[in-house]
Length: 351
Ligand code: IPM
Ligand code: MN
Image (cartoon, rainbow, N blue to C red; front, side, top):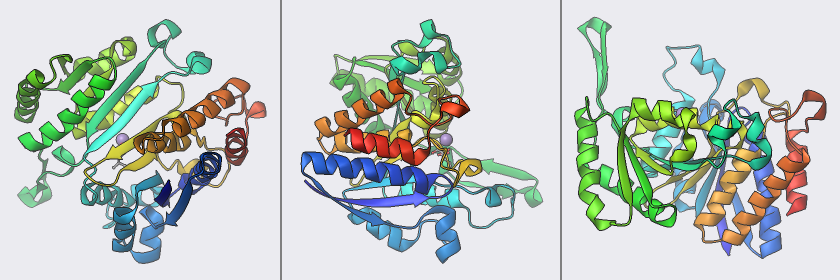
């Protein structure tokens, strides 16, 4: 295959972890006889500094025309401490999601046998956990009507969903459930919110098209609790944007390190692959960040291209690295930790 992949390194540890993913992908390409053309583009604080826009039109063009986008991280503390900043790196991420139509955010959470005891949760509670969140990504309160009234003393953000938006996300959920254990959980707050009642009603109406899938409907507060009590009781979960943002961060601690969890943002056309962690500015440039989440995101990309063997080669290499202790400091005692690039080089060589 000939693959054109837009490369958005972004901010903080983004460039370092992306470098390792590129090494690993190039090793995969060599082994399986593919050609990857990497097309770098600016995003985040780096793009604000260069051209004053966190998601410039040139970057959008490159992403739109690519077969996939590999993304590092976005965000810079300079903006977090300045509430008056007009342009923020995060706006680039939201604009990118919206303009590329990335409506479904796929966030798996699974445990690695060699790491079960690194989790803050007890082994017997998390063993065998293998669940996937499908978070709606281009609607809801993130993109609703917002504003201030009353001379700035009243602020509002509104959560709006259309039946169509719910249907296209739920369709992905049902399809994924069919390929997995045929269990789907719709997470909402239908006891309070009208938009949640639309979600529930829409998903209920779709059940007849997937008679093999067992659907449960659970309130988001209850899911937040059960997720840390019995995460292995879930399989595929679908939910709206903000609930999904919160629950997927919660779910990410189950595996033992946020530095391991990959994600894909899928749309009608191009898809984007990124680690779920942020830009981790405190670690930037120190060669200590865990590159595995980005590398496993690249594995999801190969999988979506229909290249399962390639994806498996990456996952196997990561498992071997975890088993042999070829890991960064988030997973090792300081004196046994390896550098970001060392882990990347090892994984590339392993492939
Ligand atoms: C995420 C992040 C983003 C979100 C922020 C950076 C806008 O937390 O990808 O989960 O809230 O969606
Ligand atoms: Mn988040």
